[in-house]
Image (cartoon, rainbow, N blue to C red; front, side, top):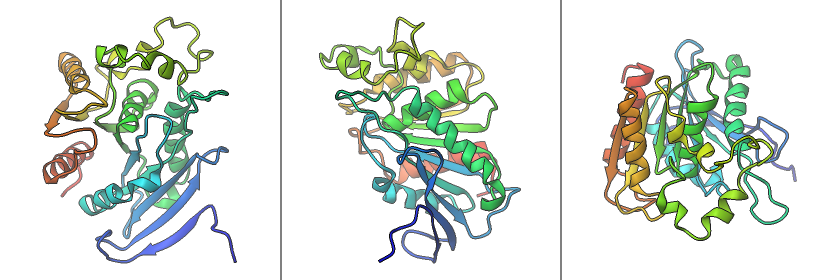
Length: 278
């Protein structure tokens, strides 16, 4: 029996999960680590002049999660946003048990490596190298940090954080007795050796600037994992900086965000900042 190849080329016909014929590449490696892979879903009529890219970054507390668990959300993105290339990426997961394997900055860098690999395949995929980042939970945090700190060429046109941590100095986290030990194992102290406040240095709210991309913030009023205060804090900072942003508060906990209102708000934000016709 043949083993599953690293890259699969599949033609998807119209179905409940895809409203357009599409070409899909699965498990595309963008680095040497086995976890550095992404899937890309291309519309039938992809064009190097107009097909822009939405990158989804999964959650999982920086130590867990996989793009394989996001199939339903990716299907929603494909159906809601015909004409876009949709990417679902994995990244190098952290290990908090000895020997530890830190998340940061590797996971921020993995977002950039994914973007670079997609750009290098621009002619193969027939895409225009303009990107929107959409992340849930830890993935939302990674998207914000990449845009606010690492996107020096302004290739990211908007970022959407769905219940992603924005301020890890929030009392919600600091007062958790396990947080200090957990968070310290996530940070490569060699990379951040000149910084004494290691929690602050990985908190997007402290890196927002007037060059930050338009930001959509979606947070639950009953979230016991990432508090609504994180969304409100970044919303205020972005408003003070005159950065276009929108805060949507849904009624529910950490994973209760998906409904028709959420889908429409996300779609409207995507089309506004990519300036595509609906």
